Length: 395
Image (cartoon, rainbow, N blue to C red; front, side, top):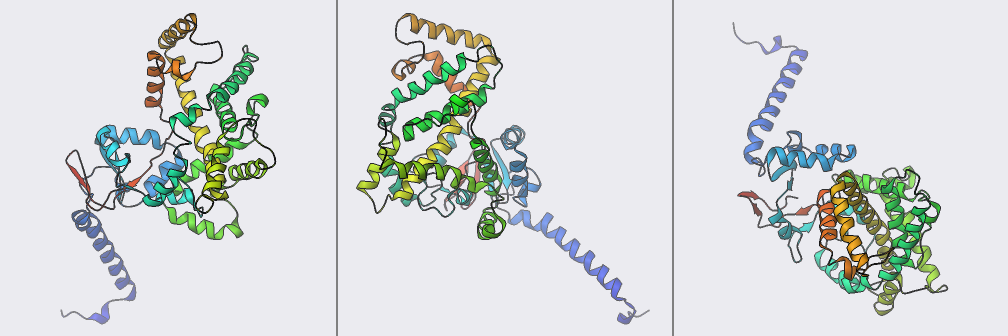
């Protein structure tokens, strides 16, 4: 019987088209694309190869730090985590990717941190601009520069220990108190004044702003275009993504301290003094906005990472009391020798206490303060790791 096109109904044609398109799509996805995919040989979760949604999901869930370890245990040192992103767990690759002079540029993930600000050492993606800006503050963050502030850190430590002694019969959250301590230290070193968190036993709502910014950045960085859409709509919809908390409360604190500095001198040399000196010497390149940016970065980055590290080290010492006892023996030996006091351990002594240093390093290894990826972009020549070629342009 000859074929009669008029015998086909509109509905049957539609069904045929849907089935055909579906089959062709499946062929393209499952057969053709893998052969054209430069990361096809890199193992990883199935959905991660098609969309950043996999990374967004786990960043939102807050389990990225555990998930990545599980994936590397399952797949090895190189795991695919996105259409154009891989995670590398290889000590030899660290210096190559993150070392000084490395040609691996920061990815668009950092753009959500910088926003519209011109001066931001952490988020700046232009290597030449970053290098120029870093030279302005290198001496301030040098080891010798930071060591100048040790007496003021010791003052805060004395206040902290005194406050803890008042609660020696209570159960307290040492992780939270470590964060209160770290914030007051940063306040003293940056502005010559503590925030008063230790005295009051509360952060006055500050930590929730920082947590909101960190949690938002972890997932929005996977889809940075969303940040700019939100930025454009924010006059009408407000701050729903919370990442702008970093540019809000902490910047307000910094702006207040900077504006007061000219009329109220600091009680001792501090980092804001040094930032202001750089501004006076290079007003065109290091303006007041840069001063505020550096001060806010101190609060944001310095306090949280310090608190997490202190809390982690104390946790592991409590979990493994035999190591705590051995550390106490070393501390008491130094005290008996008259090299340390009851309230502080000078750095020049602490650096030569091998078991103390081992505890610190092991705590940092077991519980890194940063629980999210800090992606870099592979340069045009590509990267070879453990026999696997990763093409240029991949994060």
